[in-house]
Image (cartoon, rainbow, N blue to C red; front, top):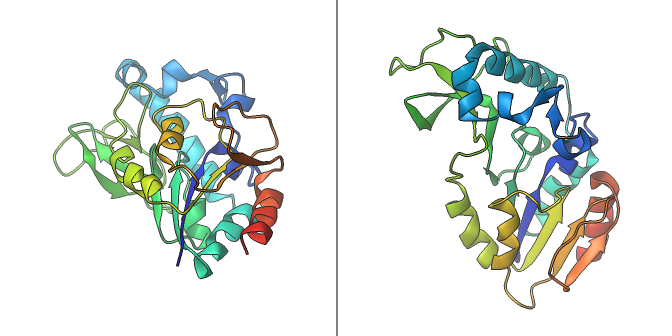
Length: 227
């Protein structure tokens, strides 16, 4: 069975109603990224940051996987499918995908400020974090999110997958955020590369098959081509 590796970004979840960062002029819910997605922002105003992610978590709980997520999950019947996602939502898993690497963390998990490597599931019944909520080690709980300026440890798991891919697909990412964008460098010569996005994506590679559609329609086209 051929190995299919799929890199997904915010455009993958846009049709589910989750806004993309690049479509919001560098603002998330009207907040500059420095206030809500950096360690410095959290140190300056932890409750603001917690409330921001509480809102996003509650938003996620009201959304459903779109046909793009479901179409990607269905490809597991035909390929050894691995997803590497820049998204912090759990829509791939809820659609049925079983091999998902989250590069930038997971919205439905928390971690201690003392140890960002160990995560704790957040119950959908109690989705909010507050100042004073402590992890078992006594540290303040924070979102299990890789903020700007922090290391991306799961990139080390993603690189070998890309190197061994028989088919590589990019869905809904502008390829501007590193280190995720750099994964394209590890695709072997001769491996088919498909890029699904309704907007133009600039890349140095000349061997990409562009599918200029949104995620749902693009995955349908991709599936027909692959099968």
